[in-house]
Structure formats: C-alpha cells, structure tokens
Image (tube, one colour):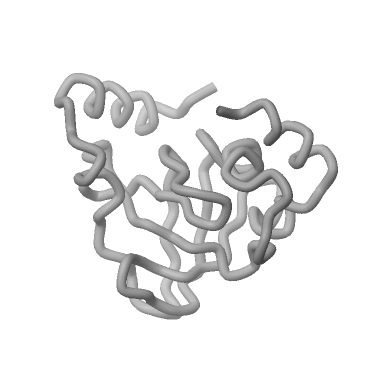
Length: 127
C-alpha cells in the first residue's frame, strides 16, 4: 500500500505533466547526513530517486554505494527491491548528478538485496 506522500506525488506528477527532465533533480544532503522518503522513480539498476516532497523536482537522485556493479536483472531488480517503499539513505558521497548513499528499507539494504534470487526473479517481470 502506498503512503499518502507517494500517492500525492504520483497524482501531482500525473496532473502537472512534469517533463521527465524535471523528475529527480532535488538537492542531495551533504555526506554523513541521512534522508528519508519513498522511492517513486528508478533510473537504472543502480540509481533511484527518493521523494522529499510530492513535487518531482524535489526528488533526490541516489546511486547505491553497495549495488552490484552489474545487477543481473538491472532496473527491474531495483524496482522490485525499492519502488514504492520508504527508504533511509545515509549519504556517503556526491556526484555531479546526485548523491552516493547506502539505502535501507524495512527489509534491509537495498543494494545487497539486488543479488538475492527472489529480487532477481521479481525484477524480471518489471518493465
């Protein structure tokens, strides 16, 4: 079940017609800080967006520091491991296009879960 923030963000995105370029452009916290929010967009097999508000321009791009270099199921696996879930991300660095972080859900490290057989299988059905 999606949280109220996730529902509001999805409705805002749908209603406003925000261009893809405006999604996931939020400012990342500094190294050592934490941020929390739902994952409402997955860019590829290593990068996701953490929503800090319903406005997609405030979604922060994050590359998972502990993601496998080549995730077997790629973007689908990251969708299965994180999409629609609340994450807590500890920022360990910054890149030009966002943060590098260790992110956890209630089920554990998102990056570590990408290699589990269950997530790999689930990732194969995501489009």
